[in-house]
Length: 298
Length: 273
Image 1 (cartoon, each protein chain N blue to C red):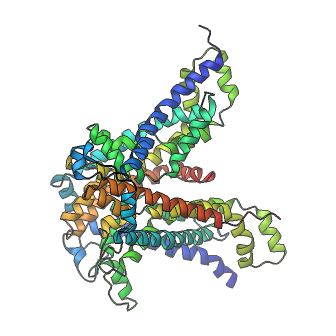
Image 2: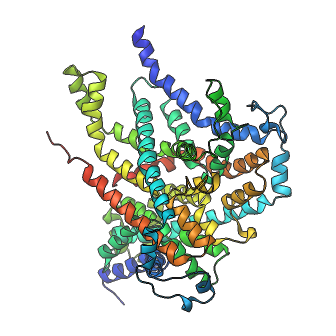
Image 3: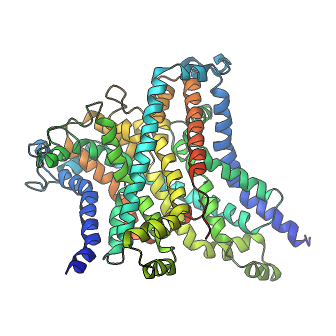
């Protein structure tokens, strides 16, 4: 009856953790392992009706991907999304954060909230809004540019412009998130460092370069890694705005995976694409961590 | 004089940036109130010549968007409740209760954050198909039953609950279940509020999973309904803008009212990166 306290605690701990652990094992780790197996089979439309018809094909799906022009095309596009879009987004966030943090700036909470608003909006909805903004004849983007005598561009219909147009939407949608994280990081930069630099006669730019940015390095690493990961997973923007076109010029890896899996029901191949995406993200993350200079100590 | 001007410069730049940032949202609202066809004139008008709510009426009367709205609300509310329940339990257990395998299990859960969600998506679909859960509310809810992020967030917060508080309750003979309900939960209220806003918004805005798992229109959530609507009504700019407003407005309102909690969550998620 008088069970020792430690045992009672252990039992309560297990019971409380159990629902989450079981759910995550069953609905996340389970599918991931199942997906690994799927990627080694030719699971297709017929296998959906009769799963036993799927055959083991070893690394066949991966080999197929590596010889598939569509895969390389999507990989290239996804890398552009990740390594042009993400740095652009981080740069905009950082610039805006420095402005919001500037001593003379007024209405700071208001700006933070306004810049954050696109982050909370529904991606599908705002992608549709931007689709109309980019409309060549009646869209506001062309109407605005016409005031500066820029000729009309068919943003989403032109294979050269569709990808940059999607990137602009993506940056607009999410720069406010990193802005908030940068502002928090800037507030943690010790005041004394700035004051000391000022006494030494450092100009505003010098202080930014030699004091603020080095202090921000850990935040910067976190922000770049998470942002690059997010841009690797771009899906709804091209799905809603261009369906991957024109001429597959915006077809991200996740969109390719979705189409292979859920339009053509090539589940085995699509599962392999998912793991290739995972591998690419992992490599990109490790590379970014390595590139980060070791923390300098003075 | 020059000093004064450079002092105003950051604010001026921020105002320009803010105008560009809200412009698409303001135009969405404005175009949704224009009479049919007005947005498709050249040059495009910024404001409606007369304000009409006909597109909102059409969305809710003919196009059945009310149903999608109700579906979204149902899924988001249930998902939020599920994540709050499971995460508050597990987060507290991982922070404060010693049980065998605790550290190992927690580390295993954290590795889930490394794996992109898309990796589990196709096989999860096949699993749910075998279980007969495709095309059901239960199917859409599956990703919102438990959350590694939620456990992580609650655990960090729960570590600050003083052990003395829990131990004195134990000495007075309170059971572990009672301690969780009447001491731990009230103490976790702030972090649970943050988590609730987070989960509600993410589930409301989620697109890929509902798109995959719901083929039947009657179960569609708002983003899925909107994406299929734009296929049929691509010419009806004003109607589509009204649909976008209906989809975006609830989350924007939640954000404006509960900003403080949401922003706290963004920060908490980045602390230990």
